[in-house]
Image (cartoon, rainbow, N blue to C red):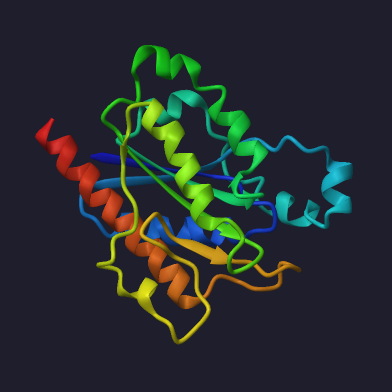
Length: 206
């Protein structure tokens, strides 16, 4: 079985919804085992409460926490992170900073890596977040995969939508009230299936 791991951080649930769609797409590929795990929260409950995120965080407690060794046992890892000033969130950065031993051992070399994201506004740093995330994947020796234009939804100009050749994305709205659209979820599913197919081919060739 080809193992596809989805690793995400979501403060209010938007990235979680995208992660679930990515998983749906990956599960469409025969011979793939798909897992979803979350990175540890670094903010105290008091701060999360003031940010209005405590309820959403509690709703995700059933999702297992990821460990660095989980990345090594997967054939593909698809990362999901909200945008923070054009970069990944601190929670994701802290987790990735704990993978130094994987880098030292070359444990992720040749594995497929991909990224999806969310932002509050339409031009809130989605592309820079994904591209800057790719730097870490390249340092780990991963094979970086995006969201090709074969997903025609990213060329839809009839609506406000996330999605770029770098990866699927959603727009949460400045108050967090906007949920991922059907088109954004379709992009996430496409990316999940695309990554899974490539990982499947690479694992068979290996």
